Image 1 (cartoon, rainbow, N blue to C red):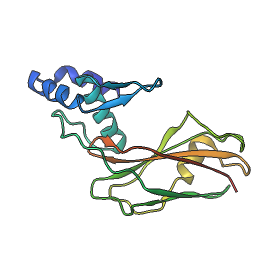
Image 2: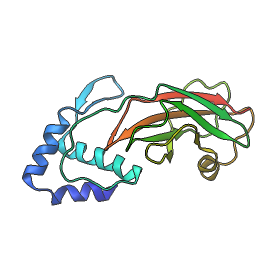
Image 3: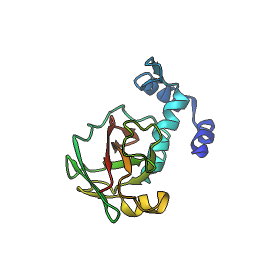
Length: 172
């Protein structure tokens, strides 16, 4: 991702101006609830970091701003031998991907988790369900019965992410 930051220096003035215009539409809310617009550099890195995570190439020209529609529902199947997420809508549209973030295994009594990590990105236009077991197990180990795992899913399209849908489930 540092490569995207370095690539900013190679853009033309016209391309940087395009990213600055796009940035005015990219509002982020900080931990205090205050809304802030991104800079052109931040917009460039944001879009291209998401493109890189999706396995797509970086873009030099600013795309048209668009927020993908959020995932509507998720149903988690979570045991010590399976971890899958059924979601709607399914299948995703052409070029769309499902980004899945998960937490470490936590106490079943825990109600909030702020440390979620990207473990899987679906293929473009993937159909439900998404199998996360192998990705989860290789990163965090086998799910333990009685532990809670938090999940956040977002829809990706052309460098932009939808709003998050966050839930959790206790390993059965």
